[in-house]
Image: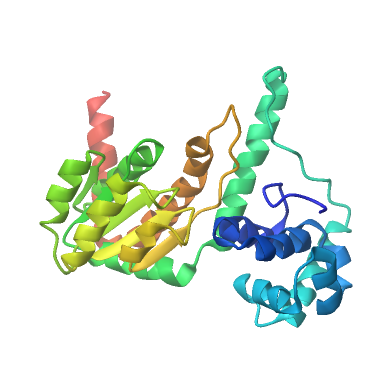
Length: 294
C-alpha cells in the first residue's frame, strides 16, 4: 500500500479519509488509503482494476466513493485526477511529523508547525458550513449557552465561553461532570449546549449533552469522530481533523488546534449575526481591561 491513511496528504479528499478512517470497515479503509496515497495511479484505474489492486470488490470501491462524498466511482476518479495534477505541479513532498526524542529543536519546530497547518487545513476542508451556520444561529439567539469539555477540550470550552461573554452573551463552561449535568437539567428550548470531545465518547461530556438534548435545548458537538456516541445527541455536528498521535504529542494536544479553529469560526459567525450588540460589548470589554492596566 503506497501510504498509510495517517500520513499527510493534501486536499479535502485526504482530510475526509482521515476523519472517517475510525468508522470504516477494513476493506473500505484499504480502498480509501490507496486512493489517498496514490491519486495519480488510482485515477487511471477502472473500478474493476482498483478492486483487484486493493483485494476488495467493485461494490466496496463504489461504497468507498460514496462514503467519501462522491455519487459514484466515476466522480471519485475525476477528483483523483485533479489531485494528481496538483501533486505533479511541483509541490514539495509532505513532511513526516513523527518527532524523535533526539530531534534538534529546529526540527521539532518545523514538524509541529507543519502539523498545525495540516490540522487547520484538514478541519477547514471537512467542516460542514451548513451545520456551522445552524449552530451560529442557535447560539446567537440563545438565552444561554453551556459548553462541556474536560482535559484539553476543557481549555477549548473555556476559550469559547470567554469569547461569548466578551460580546455580551450568557455562557458557562463546565468541566466538572456533576455540575455539567446539574446545569444541563436547567436548560430548555431556546438554550444551547455545546459538547467538545475529540474522541466523541468521553462520558463526562456525552452525558450532559444527552440531558440537554432531552430537555429540549439545541445541542452541538465538536468532535473528531463523526460516528462517536456524542453525535447521537447533537442537532449539529462540527467535525475537526483526526489528530495524528505520537509518543511525544498525544492526540489531545494535536486535536486542540482543529477545535480552536471551529470555536473561532463559531464565535465570528455569532459576532457577525449580533454585531449591533456585540460591537459595543466588545469595546466595553477592551476598555475595562485597558483601564485595569493603567
